[in-house]
Length: 265
Image (cartoon, rainbow, N blue to C red; front, side, top):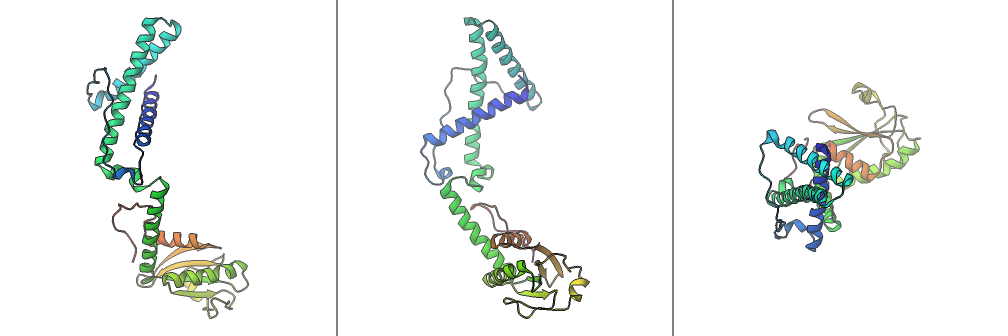
């Protein structure tokens, strides 16, 4: 058996052991906050000796080849001796997998930074709690970004997509406090932006004259920085997500994450 096959076996066995532990403990809510201790698997086998990093891969490869050879021999000649040797070789791998699963779990419990589930919850109640906190963080970040940055909106009065997007943008900007500078490429306003700028010179000078409308940009007047939010029709979720990314607001951090960093001002 090749090294990758043995590692696959170890991984599958480790996953199964971990799942059995969780189900047996009847977890409630945030299962990683419970202080239960995993009991080591009892075995009559002698513990596998430690190996240096240089020969670890070679040792696993040898174990895999030994198990493969023993099982092949037992299949060709299924007598008691050969079957015993095959089962012994397989049991050694199972014991190692159990020991790895035990050590893995104990390490995760005492090193939360490595616990993927803690920062990316999978349970429904956990997901609801995380999503609620993320929603609050994003809303706060957008409101903070609106204090220093504004939106540049380019549209046409005869564009059906612009007519559909304009009221959404007006509501969105009002919700988070963004100032919107509107430009009309055909010189006419609409119900939501009745008094747009009509001279495209400013857009042309800054290479912002779009080929597709509606077009939306995030503008920082202090640094003269312009970032494209998007072209065409966008819904509320798209708009919220794109602006959060441009403002440097984390979208996927869990409840244990630190405060936001890297937000552009």
